[in-house]
Image (cartoon, rainbow, N blue to C red):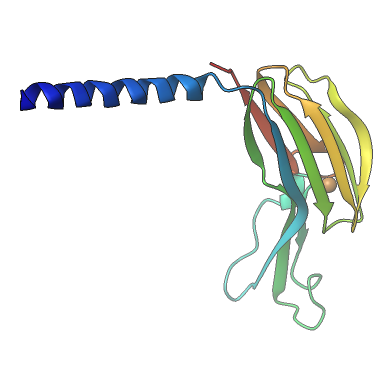
Amino acid sequence: MKTLTQFRTATLIGLLLLTNEAMAQKSIPTTHTIFMTAVELKGATTIEKLVPPSVNPKDLSKGYDYKPPAQADKNDPKKWEVSSYRFDPGFVTVIQGDTVKLTVFIVNGDEHVVRIADPDGRDAITVTKWNRGREYNVSFVAKKLGSYQLICSAHAPTMTTTILVLPRK
Ligand SMILES: [Cu+2]
């Protein structure tokens, strides 16, 4: 009899777990408020510690900057410096049908030229300028599967956040 009771308990727990899983998968569309920041990351060293890069970072992205020795710091001609503009976070995942509300604060860079492209490259948010010290709010419904991209054309292609839209089960 004890064995039967244990079996029944185990079956009940199993059913509860299955129900929970089914409920989790049948999620209803929700709104995500995502706080983002436009930042400029900087790094520096000297020619005594490391030779400068053979490829100019400026040739890799408009978002990268490179100040070679003698230009980075006039008081320290051996110093060289690199930097990169970023949106933080750079990758977000939502479920199809969700509403994405971005609140973006611009810490670095006086001006960014931004738009949000849908997975087909069409405007989800048309081109606008974002300036330092201001907070901007944009919102869209993630109707299409695939990647929406928040792109700054002034610092492309690396100043980009990908919003990956997954199917709702
Ligand atoms: Cu920018």
